[in-house]
Image 1 (tube, rainbow, N blue to C red):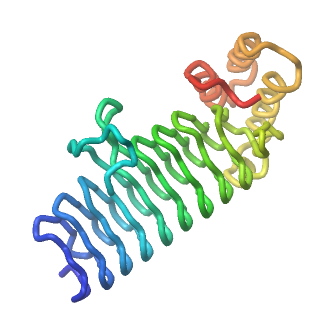
Image 2 (image 1 turned 120 degrees about the vertical axis):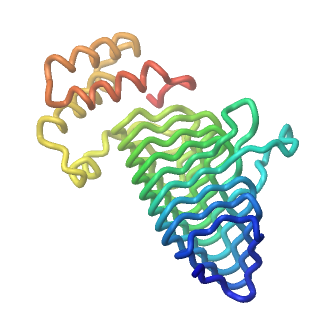
Length: 262
């Protein structure tokens, strides 16, 4: 039987798995669905068309599924979808999407999301990310898998941060950050590649060498971006063990819309 504290208010139309736990004074709306093993702490508000997967832990005072902070939003039936095994700490705010841009805000699996993080409408957060305290994502931000974001970081709307990248403390991110790169500062600059994070994830020496070479081609040889892209593409045949990593970088550079951090 679902363990709902006597002071919590759960709409009878909400769909909660029998193993869900709901803490004191939490409010859950009629269009909410919560999967098995998820724990929702006290004083949370979960509303809107929000779907939450299995084994998540949502700490106290979080606001999940509120309407987007967008003046054009007029009550349309947009969504928030949260995956499995996420840890969502205190005072986080995740908003629904807006029409015309997919209408869905998505958070993947196995993310570590610290206090006061804001995820705005139509963001996409991948898997295994770490978002430190006071991370702020504006609308339509796209974070790849294994991204790490330091505390007090603001990310501009429509920015993409590639997989395995790291953003340092208090950085204002206004351009796309390619995969594997390490950025920080105001103005933001690329300081190197995320070698510590890649080693922790078991990247082989050959894959690390390929990432180092991509960093050199894009940032250390004075090439134009088009020239650097061509040189990066060629690495797929030169370094077959790292072909997937090269493809990840090539695809990101080809699809960047705000220009990359350089």
